[in-house]
Every structure is written in C-alpha cells, then in structure tokens.
Image 1: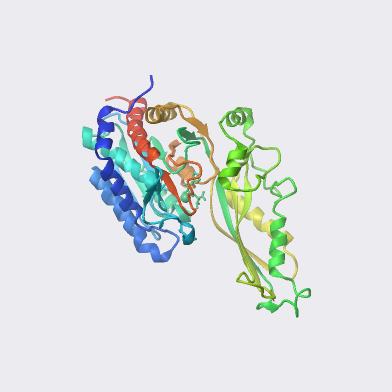
Image 2: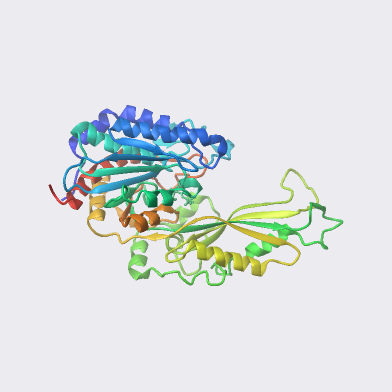
Amino acid sequence: MTASVPADLDAYLTENNDRIHDELYEFLRIPSVSARSEHKVDTARAAEWVLQSLRKAGLTAETHATSGHPIVLGEWRTAGKGAPTVLIYGHYDVQPVEPLELWSSPPFEPTVRGGKIYARGAVDDKGQLFLHIKALEAHIATRGNLPVNIIFLAEGEEEVGSDNLAGFIEKHAKELRTDAVVISDSSMFAPGLPSLLFSLRGLAYFQVDVEGPKSDLHSGSYGGAVVNPAMALARMLATLHDADARVAIPRFYDKVREWGDVVRTQIRELPFSDSEFREETGSPALGGEKGYSTLERIWTRPTCEVNGLLSGYTGEGAKTVLPAKAMAKVSCRLVPDQDPEEIGRLMQAHLDSVAPKGVTVKVMHLHGGRPWKAEPAGPLFDAARAALSAAFGREPVLAGEGGSIPVVGDFERILGAPVLLMGFGLPGENAHAPDEWLSDENFVKGMRAIAVLWEEIGTRLGTGS
Ligand code: BES
Ligand code: ZN
C-alpha cells in the first residue's frame, strides 16, 4: 500500500506555509560562513537561531561550545514505549560566497525567482536542515507528540572538515544512542525523481607548496638557469594522471573495490544523458577514467583534482618574472575501501619522488573523510521509500553521490546505526558556487516527506507498546 501525506500534517504545513518561508529566509540571511573568522559571530548566531527554532517546535535543546563552532543538540524523548529513536543530522554553516560579482542577487538576501530560492546555504544545508525542524513542528503542533524519539544534531563546521564532530559523538555516544541516522544534505537524481543514496565518496585534501629562489627574480636575467617553481609544480601535477586519466600515484588503487554488475546495471538504467550533463556544466567536452561511464566515474571511481593554483604574476598585462614559489590545492575523492590517511602517505611519497632538484616541496594534508557505501535494504529503507512516494508521488531511485559527508562513516562506526541519506537538492543547484538555489517545490514536498518518514519509521521500526 502506498502511503499518503496525512491530512492534518498536510493542512498544518499548508496553513503555515507563509510563516515557514519567512522563517527560512530569516535563517538564510545569517552569513554563517564557517571558514571565515570575520563571520565567527554570525556562525554562532546561526547556531542560536537553530536552537531557538528547535525550542519553538517543542524540543528541548542546548548548544555545546567546541574549539570551533558550536554544536546544537535538540531532543524529543516522549514518543512512548517501544518507539524507535532517530538522530537527525545537518549543518548550519555555509561555504564562502566569493566571487560575489557572479551572484544575480546578494547571497544573504534570499530571493525567489522561477520557483527557486536563491541564497548561500539554501540547499547546502540550511534549507534542508530547516525543513526537518518544520516536519517535527508539524507533528508536535497537530498531534502533541511524535511517533519516534528524536535527537537533532546540527553542526557548524561541516564545510571546514567537521574537526570537532567525531570527538563529540564519541564523548556523547551514550546519549546519542539511536536506531537510525537521517540526513538531508544531498540531492535528488532529477526533478520530480526522489532518491535514496547508497554511496558517498571520501576525501583527502592537500596543499602543495613549492619553493625555489629566495625571492622573485627577473626572468631574463635568471630564467633558464634557476629552476622555476611554477614549472616544477606544473610538471609534478602532470604526473598525477596517466594517458587514460587514471590516477598514477603508485598503489593508489590497491584498496579500491569494483562495484559489481548488479550496481553497474542499476546505474545504467537511470535516466541520464551525457550530453545534458555536459550542457548543465557548460563544459566543452566530458572526460575521465577510461572504461567507465560518467555516473560510474562520479560515484564509483576515485579521483585526484587540482582545486586551486597560485604562482607568479597574474595581474593585468605582462610582467617578466620568475616566481619564488608556487602553491596548489589538490584533493582526491575516495571510494571504498580507500583510507584518507593512507592516501595521504601515498601522495606524499609520490610527490617527493617526482619533485625536481632545485625546489623544496612541502605537502600538507589538510583534511579528509572516509568513503561510505550502504546496503539499501530493510525496514529503514522501506520507510524512506514509502515517505518519498507519499510526498513526491513517485518511487525513489537508488543513486550514488560523488560528494562527501565525512560524518556519515563516523555515525556508523561510533553509534553502530544505519544512515539514511535523503536529500532534496537538484542537479545544477550551484552548491558552493554563485547563485546557489533550492527548489521551492522540493522544500515544500521535503517537509511532507520527512513528516511521513517519522510515521513510517515509527510503525516499521517500533516494537509496539
Ligand atoms: N552537502 C555536501 C555533500 C554533498 C555534495 C552531497 C554534493 C551531495 C552532493 C557537503 O556539505 C559538502 O559539501 N561536503 C564537502 C566535504 C567537506 C569535507 C568539505 C565536499 O563534498 O566537498
Ligand atoms: Zn557543502
């Protein structure tokens, strides 16, 4: 039997639709850029805003200071005997907004155009975090209770590596004991097509500093006789891949699992077109590891990408200079069973081995996270399937994801609970980029899907009273 959205919950969300949107816009106006010290106070303000919003919904809540940004913890523990417990996780911090001039409307002034809510954090992850709070509110306001016990955990450091989160979960493992973890910090496969994720890639992020002469030099007086750090770095970066676009770091693929024909077939059956994907990115051509389709490349294969480059003169016109140093930010996306620490050691050894004489090379491992792969079956996934079908009128597809949410592996490892990744973003939503947006339709349906999810989980995972 397919579930539908219960009339009372649906009516509550409809009647309060304007207020809910106003509250979302208020949340989106807070510039909680976790990476920037000048936004430390704003980031704390966003934590406080989440705290108050949880309390208004009826949960008990408190903030926990960390050495970075605060963790907000909310609770609802009165669902009744035999009711399962669910931990909701999300993040209230956002990525920096630069380059500002590429935004069509200011990043912290939410603006609705063509059914899209534009603002930094609209989809990643404030809008998705907020829709969870409203789904809880709908239950408590209409029925006075929830069918599940809730632990609501919001952090403010996801976009900078979640340095304090694993420690917090370990320290509070007893209080955080849960039957399942639910996260909405990802996207649906296509408009109107809800999705459940079966994988996330991991991450190992590096900064590579190459230093040569003690200062910039005249490129005529010294060029050709002194090793140029920019050229040295370029040559080193060029050794990261072979001609088939495979990563050429020795032993990089040692732990990589092949996904098998079942998953490959599932992936092939999804409605996906290379040319549309190419158009969406505006890239003249697609490219990647030989022997794999685009979705396989993104979901099932590891990568090594340059995220940033800095050296020499980059201003207007020409300046004949031999730069003293060069820097690159390089990150590898990882798949099961690669380990970020081990990949860090392999990267270091490889770059040491290809560093030309005449420069010094320093590799810093900035942060990382493990890859994740789920077994998308059982009552929890059935509950999610029913909830998504009820709200979107369509069965969800199983999809992978190329991005990373490092805490997912930590939840499984520390709390021993399965994780459900149920996101409401859409392809092209510009997360981390100018003009980030959240589909209003997905926001509205997302609240309903989550409201139904608590019913479905209560029924399917509860042990009765
Ligand atoms: N929401 C994203 C993760 C994500 C990305 C899910 C793309 C679905 C699609 C998350 O906030 C994020 O951006 N994570 C970072 C990792 C972090 C360690 C900086 C990422 O993937 O780059
Ligand atoms: Zn993000």
